[in-house]
Length: 538
Image (cartoon, rainbow, N blue to C red; front, top):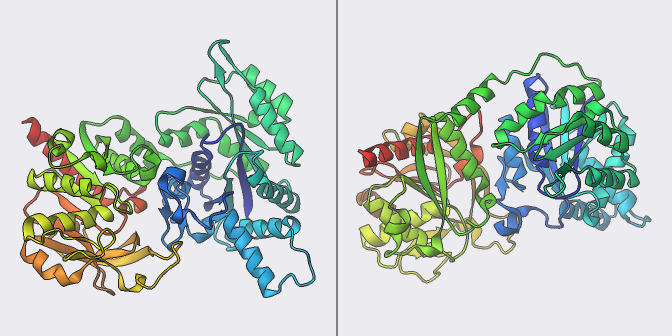
């Protein structure tokens, strides 16, 4: 029988439920269990696909084309296995499913209510992954904070689920905060006590408390928390601030979180966790032999979570190259031909990030012109690749004012155009080209040197594409289409021959980078930046 773990949060948001969930999953996986994690978000959007990154950070796309919460990226990066549509459920999707059933007449004669119909639908979704027969343990992270009005149906569903499954088959881990008051010089447990009290009022007794803290929790504080929150002392887990999220699994191992969970679920410990590869990754991450500065050009740079997967992919690739990657966030609206040198001249590489809309796009194009002309390693992702095509058309081929029809519908040279199958779509949510698609790579190219193979798959999230009417002109002018979709002929990768590293991908390679398998394009980009830094120093 599949076992279930529910992770709730209290006191405040942003405590790191996703990292704790991913870390626990990693430890259980390292002990030989098949584990997956799902995220339940309490907002009414069907998915995060239409949310501004300032609202909720990046939108993470799965292999099967689901637009999901950024925490699913953490799950994949830690576990090195893909997630799916079933791993992220929102209040919006729950209500949509229930209302669709009501319209079909499935509740004929009944008044449709939050209890039992909404809670039953939540529980049904909680069971989907477990009932697949693929997983021994399913970890469910509940978004929001205990006490939030929008979280109440999910909390009630957990209460019912735990009662139905039995205490040996479902447990609750509550992540809370132990604040340090500098004036008093004390750690305070009262917020945690109140948070657990709120859970108890909803009928849930947490089995384990994970306490976020800036200072170590002594035995006396653990005993006090255990006494007033009605848990065992060994079930009070310290989660101290770490220098990197990748330290957290080892910190949780030291706290024996995985052993306590297995004990409560009546599961054998099997072997001790095999984390040698993880420790090797951390060793290289913390002991780099070189350093590079890479500029991330985007328009959401005030909120780094908007580019979370890109930042993590740099960490993975940096560790692989034994190099510390210092990412500088540069707002594209602040770049023009006059400011480009001052903004970019000190960098060893430039990544132009994805995005939508006209704001900041000319700054991205000007940045690309500077790095192309000055042989600075360049990597463009999605819109970043499209901007590289526009820049090359304008400044090399001579297509004056070339543009994307996303920005200028009447441009004389639509080198980037809306995909044919997108032109009649009116709904914005979940209708882009989403998920994994194949790509054939030409031998003898930078892309082939990175991947080491001719056939790959990558994840997409876009409506616009390279206009193949201009492909011959571009290739004659020196821009190579090194990656092509074998089914549609869509240009997936462009690059320049006579440049140290100038590569743009229509897809999002950052979404497939994990600790165990850093993405090859990021590895090669960081290596090119290292080589450029060495030449610059000499």
